[in-house]
Image (cartoon, rainbow, N blue to C red; front, side, top):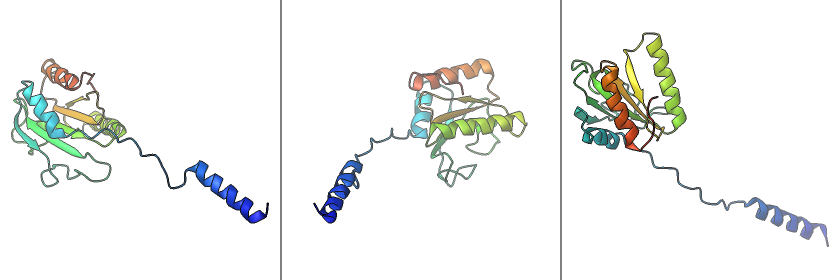
Length: 165
């Protein structure tokens, strides 16, 4: 056998084994939850939520919705203990739901919030995470722990899992 056909055979075998250009279709990732759907489910559970709103790029008080490394979906509501004079759709008014692309991003977000809380840069707030760890529920710290437990239960029952972040 001459060198050229042998090289052609080896190249063809290498490409066949490597699967060059023929990747198996990746399994689709779980679709991202929608923050408003989560908020509506929480409201349907009987929690005292008012002024339910879906955050858009124009109404995001943090001005980061949809930017790289930020939440991809956000919704907010007021609670009776919240500050009605606070900026619309901020956690001080009540409750905020953030949906992130990955659970690691939420873990980083919680760590960042916890650090800001520890340094006194943010008012106290409660954090809850359902089984889908891409979701973060933030509740104003003006809700006493005894009442925050009800929110915790609702978040845990969104999909049957633990929720305290």
